[in-house]
Image 1 (spheres, rainbow, N blue to C red):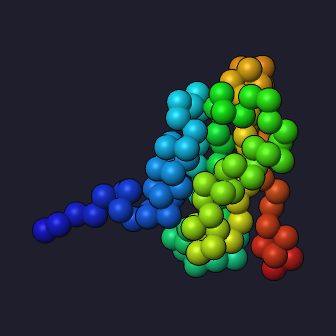
Image 2 (image 1 turned 135 degrees about the horizontal axis):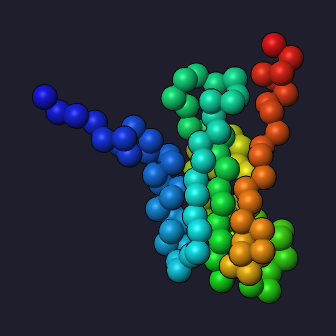
Length: 113
């Protein structure tokens, strides 16, 4: 009997991880968090993500420029099924000073149900 690997069950998340690893290597910290379960989507969806990227490539860039770099790296996913992308993009010095991932706000739709 064939078994399915956990990564095969998460093709969008794996694609995001692979593209960010390639674009921001070497990186100090990379985390891709599927936050879809906190939204009004079917179980197992891959539509809402938070990415945390800590890389030297952000040195000297404004926050908006960092976000644009991440967004352009993930253009295919954003044009496809990814509905929301939260980005934490820090330099290594910023991460060392405050290695915190801020919580995402609750889904407004889920709160009014």
